[in-house]
Image 1 (cartoon, one colour):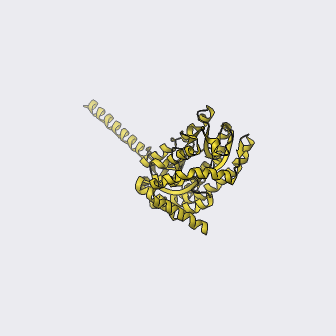
Image 2 (cartoon, rainbow, N blue to C red):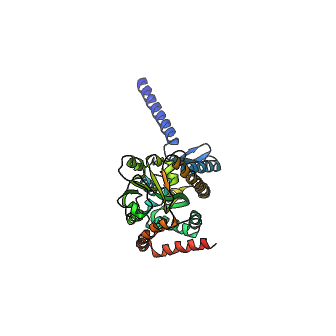
Image 3 (cartoon, rainbow, N blue to C red):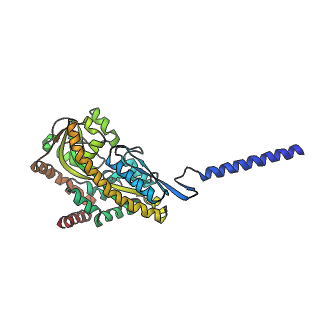
Length: 351
């Protein structure tokens, strides 16, 4: 009997220890939100595809991180994942839509397969001025576009940023007219309007994931690509580039997005901080981008890349060939949204 009692005591002790262990692991579980003595905290991942160092996007997100964490007094923890660590832009977009990634800052090009209206911003020569683009996107037109995206996709747009003005780069020969593009394999983003634009210029559009662009140039898989100076400098593409021509064919835009179901689950004060600080991030990021673009041109020239400044007449040749592409996509994207954009541009330019 004594032996039996002793055995029962050991079993009870083991069960108590196991219960304590389970309680302990539950309190420090690996889910996104955890509780501590100071209350609930929220760890939010922000993905993007730009460089991890010396880049205007990651640098601006570090400013965003500091502002959010300071303002929330540690309730929010921001983790940035640059350089396509969580996949290319398409994978990041899918991740935000599914909720496996909370937030991302992405160029608008890959949205075409998820939210067709976003393609309006990627039509060639549609937003010629960065200052005009800022005012249009930060106004009713940009808000309306984000509202439509939320309704159709479950992705909430929080703020607009700036990827930069895109130019033509290649390793074959200087590009001064569309005739110089003929026969060249040009890497494009996964956006049908961009691909059709390169085809209209006479090139062979070759969609390649952004993380593979450097090696594709290095191995001569492609002849060239099109990107803003800030990315060419930040991603060190100048190391595998001979010529850049200032075609200015697309004014690239960033969208700062969040999974709406996740966002809606957050306390109201946390939501307010994120909304307000993404708006502040927008101003910081745009200025950083313009600074990097300006410095990047000189730096890239110093690395031996030939930068060709085209005349207005030469740029007009590219614009003329791009017009049928715009005409083709307007009915697909929507006559109404195209007219809304044109009206918004006209209003901003008249003020």
